[in-house]
Amino acid sequence: MNAPAMPALTIPAEFQSCFDAQRAAYLAAPEPSYDERIAHLKALAQLLKDNKDDLVAAINTDYGNRSEFETLFAEYFVVLETIADAIKNLKKWMKPQRRRVDFLTYPLARNRVVPQPLGVVGVIVPWNFPLNLSFCPLASIFAAGNRAMVKMSENSPALARLLARVSPRYLPVEKLAFFEDGGGRGPAFSSLPFDHLLFTGSGATGRSVMASAARNLTPVTLELGGKSPAIVGPDFPIATAAERILWVKMFNAGQICTNVDYVFLPKDRESAFVDHCRQLFAARFPDVNGPDYTSIIDDRAFARLEATLDDAKRKGAILVNLADKQNCDAGRRKFPPHLVLNPTDDMLLMQREIFGPILPIKTYEDRQEVADYVNAHDRPLALYPFTHDAGLCDFYISRVMSGGVSVNETLLHVGQHDLPFGGVGASGMGHYHAREGFNTFSKLRPIFYQGPISPIQWFFQPPYAKRPMKILQTMIRFKT
Image (cartoon, rainbow, N blue to C red):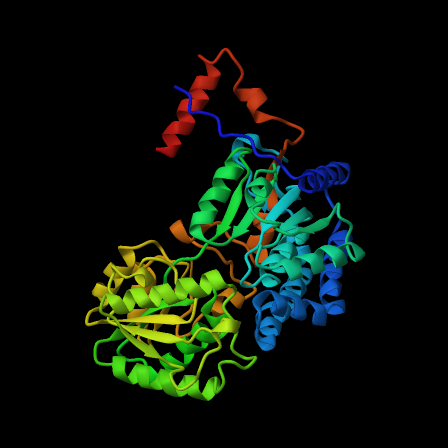
């Protein structure tokens, strides 16, 4: 019995007309030259350079308060670096690959794998790093020769309006177009028959995006989140671990998909870790209401974080407010950072991604205990082992699967331009960044070129009973 058909969605006219224009432009000129791709990448970079202050201001407006340094460092600078890396390596990425030819097709035959543009790529961007997570994919998409439609988050209206307004000055809408969410238009966007669709966001929304894309058998790359653990080995200096973990947990007020969601400490190191975190936070953020400490994105997220802490306290956790001598401005959504001691699995903060400045601390006695705990849950987007013991480090990398790994550090594997980025299992599927990004948004097309003589035509034509069968049986004997 056939499953009932999913109801058709009404596609907004601006989505459909843009898609039709980009598809027509692709069909008219499906393979931009190397020089054209370089020009497109340089146009992206010029858009950023010409509008730097306006872009920073728009992101700040959408957040309520977004640290200018964090925007420039984690978004603006990283994007310019990514574009520069694509320009530097594009000729190498575009080069057809030579592949071995099977002997039955000799002589003078050739095999090649030729990367070709897919066509029109859709990009769905979250609010937490809206410039990074739109322009870094665009660098790969344009390097591969495609066209792109980008839907921004409902929490990024100021940035979306700015990009929609200025983008046509640098690239025609047949090449690149930005759209506001406009309130619940995501399912319609992901229902367009894109040649590839990239989504970054939550697992729940990722499942919906994948279901929408399935209507058209559109391939998807999903960059999701999850509960990424840090594991501090017994040999690692606790002060250094606290310094590196607290840095990422406070960056963007913890609103990062690859953030440390909880930390495992040796059983006797918890107090020292807490003390170092107190000292570090007081030194780094003497005024949480100042511009360096980023706001929570909206009232709903702020209320969710409050409810998460209330739930943990009610179920027996000990809360350590790192800003306990400062009064956070709730009106500006400045959420006080907390360590949570004695977390249990029935607490909300251990059941879903926290996405805020709250850090649960678990203790352990045995490394297998840690591996078993992480493996009993969804595979995380990142893993952060802290140890100078190579054997212990290899144990965690081998026994705990994750999207990526930073050893003795947090987050920085994501910023390595020659490393692919992507999740595994519930934390995502597919990769982009660097050559892997170019490959994701290309059709790596296998092409066989026959030579002047075809051995198949000589030796394997019917009737098969005599010479063809003898030759085949001889070949089989040599293979076995």
